[in-house]
Image (cartoon, rainbow, N blue to C red):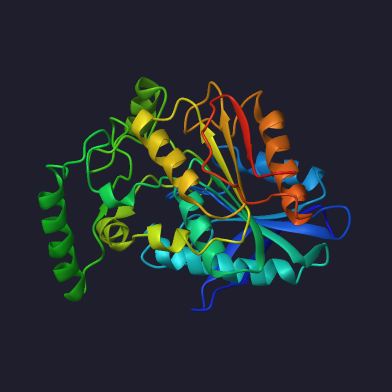
Length: 330
C-alpha cells in the first residue's frame, strides 16, 4: 500500500466522503481528522499534522467534511455539525478496515469547530479510544452573540428573518441562498471574529476571490446558521468519560474564548491533558516552526492514552499558559 493515497468512504445516508490516507509503516493506531468550519483538508496545516502522525507510527485519515471540497453533499457548503458527528463514526468504520490500523486503537481529532464535533463523536462512539480537540469553540449557549458580550447580536433578528425567507424560497424550488462565511472584515454575518491575524491581507484576498485551498470556496448557505443555532453540544460532553481527552489551545486566542475553553476542559470528568501553545493564534496554531514540538505533545498523548497512562484528576486543574498541563497522569 502507498504511504499516501486518496480514498473515499460511504456514510450511513449514502454520501461519499473523500480524503487522504497517510498509512503508517506497520499495523498500529489510527486517527480520523477533519478541518474547521467550511474548510478543506489542504488548509491550515492539516496535511502536515497527518504526516507527523504517520511518522509517529499512527495511520491518519483526513477528509473533507460533507458538502465541502471533494466530498459529496447537497446543498454545497451547508455545514451541519450534528451530521458531521455521525460522519466521524462512518470514518472510523472505514479506518478500521484498513490494513495498517488496529481497530482496538483508533482515535479522532478535530480543529476549531471540528474539535467540538470530535468531542461529541467521542462521547457517542466508544471505538475511539481517545480524542484530540484543537482550539474547539465551547461556548455554544452564546453562539449568536457578539464575541465579547453576553447579549444577543443585534444582527440576529435580521439574519433569522433571511433564513426563514430562504426556507420559503427553497420550498418554491429555488436554490439555497449563499453568503460569504467570512466577510471582508474577517467576521461572520453575526459579527463574530474568526481570529484572522492579518486582516488587511485577508481583505485583499477576499476582494480578489482568492481560494484558501484547493476546492475551497468562502461561502455557505443561510441554513448553516439555522443548523448551528439548533446545535447544543454541552450535554454530550458529559458522556466523553472514560475516553481520554487532549485539549490543544492557542495562547493568543480571544481571551473570552480561551477562558471558556479552559472552563470546559476543567469541567470534563474524563482522563485529560491540556496544552496551551505559546505565541500562536487560532488560525496559525498548526503552521510554523513550533509544529514539530506541538505534534510531539499530540503523539505522546496518543501513545500514552492507548497504554492507559492518562488517568482522572483527583481535583480540578488550573490551566498554565505556555505548556502542557498533565492532569492525573502517572
